[in-house]
Image 1 (spheres, rainbow, N blue to C red):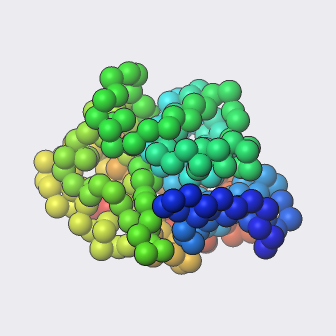
Image 2 (spheres, rainbow, N blue to C red):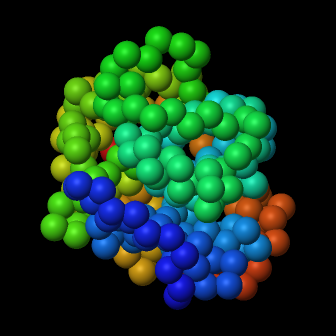
Length: 248
């Protein structure tokens, strides 16, 4: 891969690398984002952030909140496959926002990128609720991704306030242990606030993606939605990930 852009600040270093039309963002050595406009599906963990939206009938998800934008891969995928009316992306790092706009071409009319601390933004938000909230908030420590806030009961309750009555929370957990320790599994009161839940995994990474739904939705709906797109229905894409319904 060729390095096409670098920047060093007092606290961090950034690189944008390309191979053909593929663009990658690295922050402090951590691989943050991967995007190719000709291949919107990455066959990587980022796919698992947008795929839960396909559990809902087409057109159901109109407003989306993305906490932790990075290079904006999930925003590209949401606009391509889900087509919501509005996406709000909240990102603490101003350089990530610059990279998302300049190199990853996140310049959609329906998308607003907000430079803010996502935790504070969530606490202060008082606007229209969202049909989908994606929690992908991560920082870096010693070259490894870390969550700046635990997915505990307090955090779940704050995110629940942002959801519509039938909305869904999708959260990225770097390890299975982190997923098992989240409030959905440790707090019965939190679990009862959701109608059902799914776990998505890929063989390539340890990440567990939790999809917590306030309304019952079926994997068959996801399969039907995937069948509408060549990129999702060909070449065994459905074999690159696993989706499991979480039993109460």
